[in-house]
Length: 293
Image (cartoon, rainbow, N blue to C red):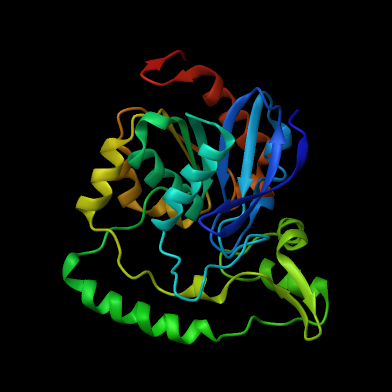
């Protein structure tokens, strides 16, 4: 059983990034990346079901207890590639594994493609890579992104009278989840002010990306991945119905695809022990460039 070690804070190019540290220091090093508008508590039920791992569950910039980016910075996915690698460098990890959920899984895939020599295993929970776009829409995408930035730069979060109201709003929100799971995220992500309780996420996270990947971009990242890859999908999730994900999975040399009962946050609400069992077996019996299964 993996136990919680404590809170960590890393300074990456002047940005304070928070993390929850789990497990034994001399075990398999792993960095865990959460989904959009979630936080590091996303893995609070999954990790205690595992063993022989040393995990940093990060709060991405603008999420949880991590700092928001400066006013002139953006939240495009690719900025996080270097930040995660820098944290691994600060930990002294020449090589490590990645576990990502949703948006965090997308970032994990980009890291694994950018630095294949450093990634031992890649676990992607209910996500794969972004749906590709066509290049001729890039100008419209850029314009939308700039308009969004202006709008959300001065936007205020929603305030709630009680902590429970904030939990309930998250439970019923985009990609809804059950009350207990929402409360786990809220204990890390909700703060109180004179105006009430609010989710401590940078509002600029809601801005459209300045650019999106074309099919050629995505193919380039996926074909560069050399780490054994585990794709876990939930039966009742939009991702299982997307044919693009099936096509992309075939581009990686070494991958295992598993579908489990549950919804998008299956590792947090439906099947944490089942997901943990699948991940644990994968980490123990799949090696880079060699199948020990």
